[in-house]
Image 1 (cartoon, helix red, strand yellow):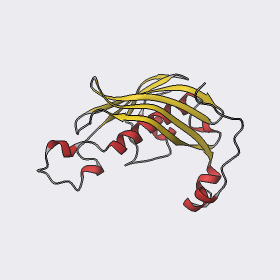
Image 2 (cartoon, rainbow, N blue to C red):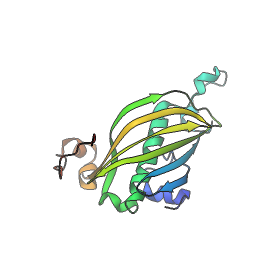
Image 3 (spheres, rainbow, N blue to C red):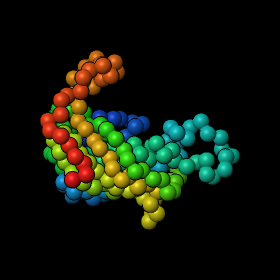
Image 4 (spheres, rainbow, N blue to C red):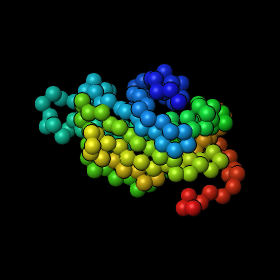
Amino acid sequence: MRSGYGQILASLPVRHPMVLVDRITEFDADRSIETAKAVAGSEPCYQAMADDLPPERYAYPRSMILESFGQSAALLWLGSRGGPDAAGGGLPMVGRLRNCRFTGSAFPGDVIRHRVRIDRLVDDNAFMSGESLVGDRVVLTVGSLIAVARPLSVVAGGGAAASITAAPPAPRRPVNPRK
């Protein structure tokens, strides 16, 4: 997988300001990825903040760190399966996050490195784990991220109501992530 920003845009179904991965620094298909996200003080989450706040108030939102980790996981999953069309024409989505633990924060000027590993691939589901670091300091540990691919007709066919009311596709076979 190429590491350029254009490849990231071609792979992810989001655009500015929600693209939260700046580059891919390492990629091992079917195994792992490392990505980088530079935190800038000019990001939308800082726009309405006063200038004289205590330093800890400028911590990058944890929800954005999780989203950036999830985008890194999507890049790994799609890249390991052949690119943006790897989900069989479906949209990759996080189905569940478990055992997530924040142990630090990131601030403007920091670079967050996400290390994501594939633990198991089953049909249109991926089981991944990993951590996010600032320098050598772990700021987030994700014990389990379960990703699913949903057909675009279900997700985008009739807007948000269609994705809520449409029945999900029947599973192909039972999934036991503990194996």
